Length: 392
Image 1 (spheres, rainbow, N blue to C red):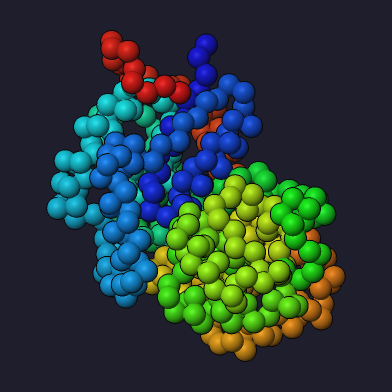
Image 2: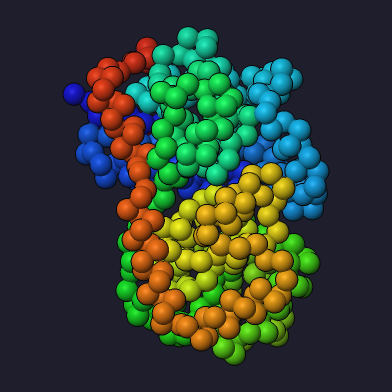
């Protein structure tokens, strides 16, 4: 008997959606040796030349024109994609996506971004007979996520479930599972080994993140990062710049950031380790990063949330006591003084928060496996007679 095939579809608008897909894929494989997974960023996979231009334009818009992005988000908050948008997606994606699904012949499709969810939903209405799960990777839900063809929504909180219910989604099609994170964020690593690995000191440590793209606007660099650097005699700073090589090189040219206790970190797969030795996280309120931080029990300060989903996330985290939005440098001073005065006690409090958070978490993988076991059937697609171009 062949292994169960799970196809996970994401998009490259930020890193969080794809991180969630990979985290869920790993969790599924750990849960069952009879399961294989494949993660695909659909746009980049189908249009490798066009996709980087699209993602670059998106990044420029959200960083240089956040109000415009926020206006578009709010204007379409309760709306499904328009006919024009659906037509564009149809021209660019539908036929090729159908071919990919036919070749891979999955037993279940999971989408962690609304665009592939829209595309697969349309294919299902046209006759595709494969169950579709959609994982909502924020702490609110935009109208573009919602479609009657989705078999099951896996959501972060009961509040998101309530929002879906208010939009007409049936209760049986929604399950509160939390957002999937890599298993490394559920366990504690040796702090001493991490410090040796990265050349860090055993002192109060603050991690600063600009998202997977490592984007810090000019004013954020001049106001936020420069001010944080003024504390570097007493506070160790880990400034994570992701894939933004240019920003890292620019900071390295400035004397203020070439201090012994300031570490400018490029792209790394060891964020879970760096979070373990960090006592405070300063970040934009992206759904994935903050979910990882909550799993680690790190208190958070938020800066410059993008109007739209990040503002909604920020509201959720503040109301539930996971962090605060930075409104002045006085707030930074308060937290940094707290780190210096209560360093050992804060570390103990972090352990308690992490254990409490992880005990409450449900699993997306568990929900998917339960669904497959209950249905006990697979929807096989007639495979192409040609040699498949895509392999598991």
